Length: 70
Image (cartoon, rainbow, N blue to C red; front, top):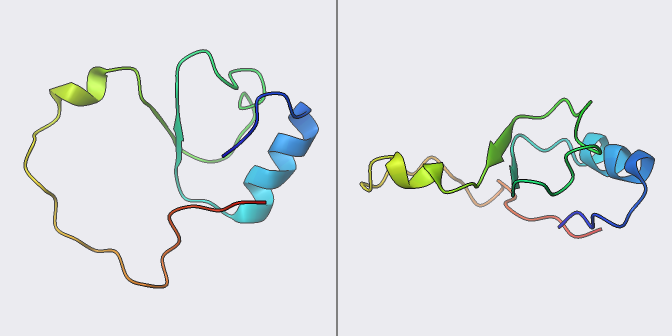
């Protein structure tokens, strides 16, 4: 998780250093800190309810990290 109380420079470093492929976020949280982020963000604002409810093909492997704690 990224703590919104961290300085923007620290958050930017954590995002770059982790080499994440996707960032899940909520509206209004980290807006300024993520302005220059070079990672795709999925905004969890409720619009995800409009997507199909069927499962996608599972492409995940054991070596694919889903969560990183600094």
